[in-house]
Length: 281
Image (cartoon, rainbow, N blue to C red; front, side):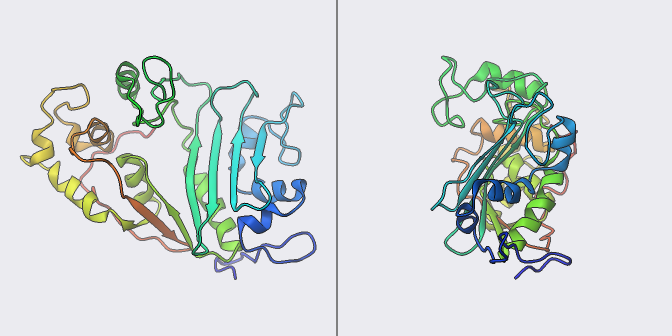
């Protein structure tokens, strides 16, 4: 049962209630694409002249791909201005969980006309799978200096605030009460806090990180200029801290952070209240 004011239970064209992505994925292709299309920010359609009915651009080519296989409770949405584009403008991956919750696995919204930084490949051009197979230090330095955060290949379009309310309504219409996610970096975790997420696991680590970056404490002392990612003053911003953590300043893996958003509620968590804000990318 939907809980948000003015929202209602999602149904198929025959009025049958839908409770999971698996239910949606059993529908005919056009019907499930219409339902999934409601969680794409409206601004993307107008910005890139994409039809909300056909998902085609002014050139007649289809710009939006929905991957929602029958029998599975997963969905991937990719928006590309051209089929040959290396990076999507919008990339979303969501999944049912065994606890009747919605997992927000990935949400990436790129500015396709901004400079690309090859931080996602090693120095030989091979995919590094979020740096688990090696880093591309020269590209990371350029990305950092351009104001990007770890793992960002492009500047963003700052549309997550447009996406999340649509996604929350969609999840609520399935009768689910919780969205879960796993931040891939420190800045992701802080950003999710801003949108009302709470911690399932990892809040203690986030508080320890904040304490460690305070003046005279362990992480602040490690900002000794020994690498471009450990410059003095990085402790004051999310951007600086995130790159220092990406560089291994914690001396432990960034792992085990799980967060959740209860539909219609905001947790009000802020593990870095004294931060100096800079323009987000």
